[in-house]
Length: 300
Picture 1 (cartoon, rainbow, N blue to C red):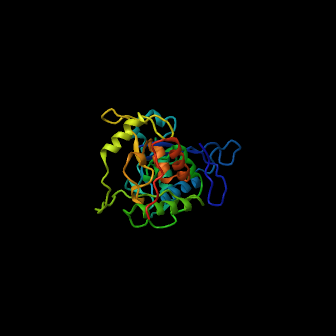
Picture 2 (spheres, rainbow, N blue to C red):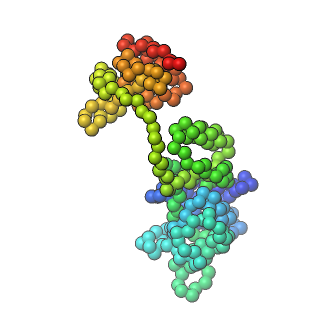
Picture 3 (tube, rainbow, N blue to C red):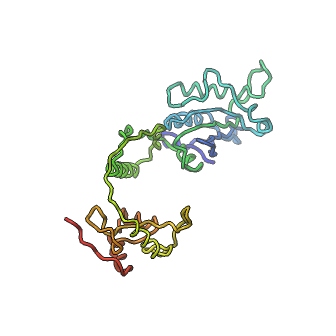
């Protein structure tokens, strides 16, 4: 539970927290209490903080599904009785699709004040403890604490429009590297991604490898990575240890598909041999550690 920081860097007195929920998260805004100007007032910035949260949720592209009163007395009721009816808002509503945030905040306050009141009775507390149930694709893979931290500070919109999809592995890797470099700067809203993922048909060329070489190398390894010595991470459906076969001199560089050019390794070492900054030293280490291997020359 924490207080948000507004866009001018000021900490607001308005405690909130986040709880994980399927497809998104719940934002819990703590109630304001005490006399407005009294010494015991708590969460005095309830209204501006709620507006701030709605703006930031809009920047993320989150959708509001429901608002509940979750004060102590309200929690004794069934969940369906805790939901607020918001006039002029059809739920679920995507918060980034325009609309008057101040008006939405005011309507939440009106409905909160009316909660538990007899029909026709005016007044009531418009600053109750409430829960906003939200969905947001970016929540996938994020903890509740990470989302809570994200909402605490100004959210910068994504720096650019999504690039056109690519099926080219090298181009994709280059784009990932550019995005990683950009994200080392100021934090920005996580990307929404694509719900509809395009599919393309590609014509690719492959090397015709000898299955006997793969089977032999796997058997010699006896279930352990020939590079780091770790046991295979799991068993395949046929009960055999899962190891991957790596060509020390890649076939694309003219390396042969022979037992003196392959080793069986765990997935981590295999990825390091292909992509690690230390891949050349690993290759040389493998040549020294595995007697059968030979340093085949690079084909020009």
